Image (tube, rainbow, N blue to C red):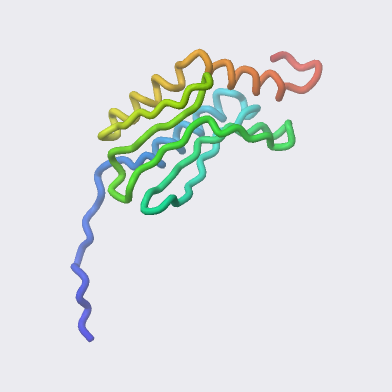
Length: 131
């Protein structure tokens, strides 16, 4: 039987949401001195990818807090950012990587998000160590 596949499947030039999320998780881990780690997990829900952005605190028996989720199809965009910070579930739909990064920047700047990270970091600091 002949090979019916094309010679080249092409190259996707759009940055996937999961790549952006993993980079932000690394930044968060570094910026908190490893006290609070950012972790990204991927699951499937029907025909969609669902990434969860989780804050993990190793010194608190690996306590994990799901900060937000991102959902998209195999085509990558639009990507939906969903969170329940401050007790209100919000959904932001982004059409491309630039919009997605802007939505993440706005989300991470929310006072409630900053309080969550600060509270986890404060609990992670060993007794007697400066915060």
